[in-house]
Image 1 (spheres, helix red, strand yellow):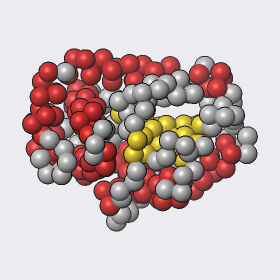
Image 2 (cartoon, one colour):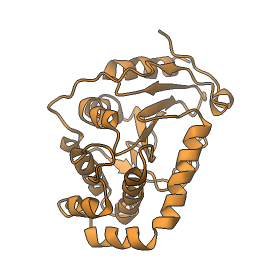
Image 3 (cartoon, one colour):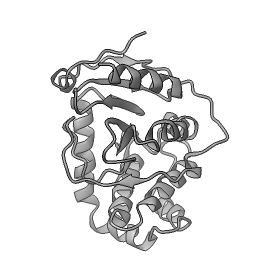
Length: 240
């Protein structure tokens, strides 16, 4: 099994080769992403991959030489498995040493409640991005910990507000106001993120693209992959 390194031009045309497509098999571990406190930063730039970074949490150093784009949906069960089983190791092995930064892009692949959660995510990030960025990570992990059956109502606005009240540093009343006053505007932003994802071949969650802005080498992984698949993908891109 190999991972190709197409140019950015080829990638934008949807030509990236996927490593381990459909391999949704990761076993849950006892460790959760909620136990980590990684550094986060924000950006208003458009990345070399053509992704608008505004409104998206970025885990890791802004100077990291490699980027991983992570498309996720709070209702996606395989995203939850990745968050529990692989994300903590990925942060420890690559993000904390400064080798990789992870751009988190929330998209609504599972319907109306997924859109509500994606809009709420943007509201919370805007609320904390200039002050307590780590509070977003706590909120993000707390929502995944509450994940129920898709479209069962667990991710309704009312329930998201209830979960938020347990997260220190995030104002649930401010989130409620944001959901009421800015929902249409933020739904348009989420929709644009989803359109952009589809335009570069992202058709489900979780999907990851490992990208080197300097060489424009890129490769993708699909599903709740173990750390070893990320090791291989990162090595291939570094050697491109």
